Image 1 (cartoon, rainbow, N blue to C red):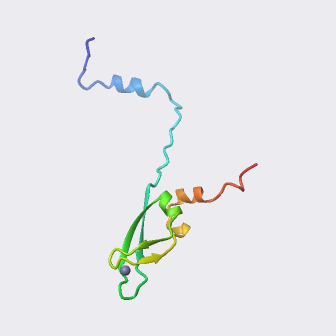
Image 2 (image 1 turned 180 degrees about the vertical axis):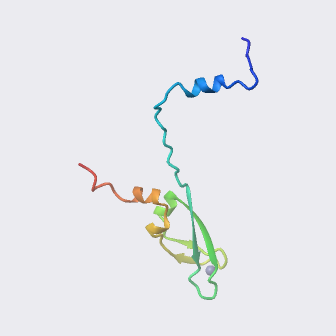
Image 3 (image 1 turned 60 degrees about the horizontal axis):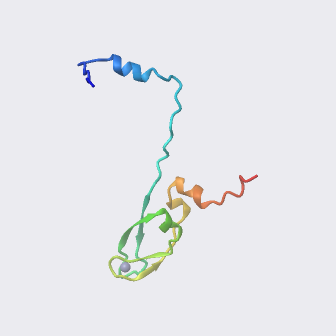
Length: 99
Ligand SMILES: [Zn+2]
């Protein structure tokens, strides 16, 4: 019931950290949730620089964008190089590594 708080107690910290010397390091790969690409409007009279944010799902199905200035449709595609390396793995079918 009584919580003992000792000021400047180093013992408590050491006890916790010494419990396991060879602990398993948990790995949390940083998943990129959104990629930002920059696309110029293809129409010469506009050439507006559009900033597009794509989620992974959007990037896979990406076929173009609507210009933020002239509101005309631009046919476009994203190259794999435009996408984060962590996404590329998912786009490549795992046929080579299968048994
Ligand atoms: Zn435009």
